[in-house]
Image: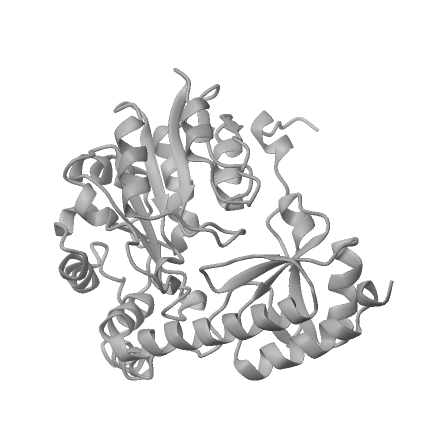
Length: 357
């Protein structure tokens, strides 16, 4: 062929997938309770105001809601078509071939794709023995080629968390010329105290970037809505690689309705904790090991090839994520569903072959 693709694409896989069967979907960390009932009314309003018009490129109304909720300036916020788009925007804005991105070896795959697509290199510091993030290892991996580090807290796919004092100590040790991306997609599911108030740290660390999503606690995954909070300078620079109308009017309206419904978000949070505790209690009774999680999913060690277990569970109506996607070949990642789904999953898990070998 006469044409040539960029060399960086050789290390990436096509992001194409078939439609997922309508079984018990416990593989994508989706919200099993849907979204706020106020979202429907908000969507109807967007149809009445004119679908033929382009959406607000500044996301004015939702921007004001988020600025007030997190006590940040409205010009310190940037929206994306899901946090995935923001992750790619960060790569486009900061990475050159040969640059490095430091991220713990078990973390969110979109950062890998974004980095490699720009011809930059991923550096993977090891996890601790309990699968929590080793922040000292992250610091030790920083070199003069490091453009940014990525910390997902609570972490995906392990579900582990670190708290306020630990984060503050970590931030103090990161060189000022290295950006720090704190991805807090699952922060709302943490039920304890002392989760980092990362927003209050923005004034002290102008190299700090926070990522948030509407897909999880708010149940708006299909609308593809995420946002980042950072200094005005970072937002200004990253926005230069943003598509003008990257967020639809419907997504904006849904996000505004969802973020105002505190009662719905609290219901999801509490039910998630109840169902997660039930799942872990059952796993304890089965003497099945897992990584203690503070999120809407749990990594379970099935003690054999995870793909065989994933296939067996699918036959019984339950879709889960194989740990091999993360390099954990004997683990499965299970999203927290409703209590009915968790009871059905435990029943199915009890019947798969690994418990009889």
